[in-house]
Image (cartoon, rainbow, N blue to C red; front, side, top):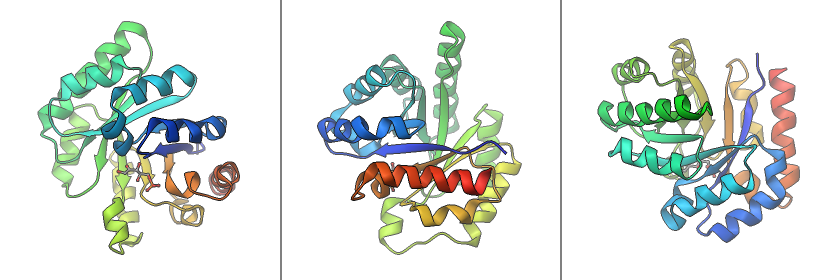
Length: 222
Ligand code: 5RP
């Protein structure tokens, strides 16, 4: 089983704060996420700046697009994003148009672009089938920040859904208030990426926190 990657979620309100985090944390992680909060606050300059500073890293624009798939995909890819997110309640036409843009860019310059469907809120297995038919390979299984704050934990139902998504052929990112102690819960599943934001950025020693995630990944997935 390939080792899951570690993604740093930058849900900072300013690019300055985000860059202070990446200055020490970029070498520790595989994927750098311009978080939804950062993209809303600072726009595409955040994506552009992250890719310019860290060209060797996968940069994800977590814009959770709900419409205008082609325009938004063009925008994030023109600014250097490798991956972007579309929210699960978006019409299939939005998923398809974002995916079409990703494929076009990849064919043009050979650099892989991808679209992830973000599973925050409601979605159905029929929709999941439609995403597969549209060529979607990656989904983000996300316990939303607000759901977590309202007391929602990780449970058996999450693991069953994650397993079923894996069996459908999706590559999975897992996120939502993850702390390192949560990782063993998912150890039977070939997770592609673990995404952590606050538990790394807000730690007393963020570098140590990122290294603990990496060590737990190595311990449970080797
Ligand atoms: C919020 C997000 C976050 O980027 C994701 O949940 C990771 O952040 P944290 O670990 O702080 O919950 O997508 O919409």
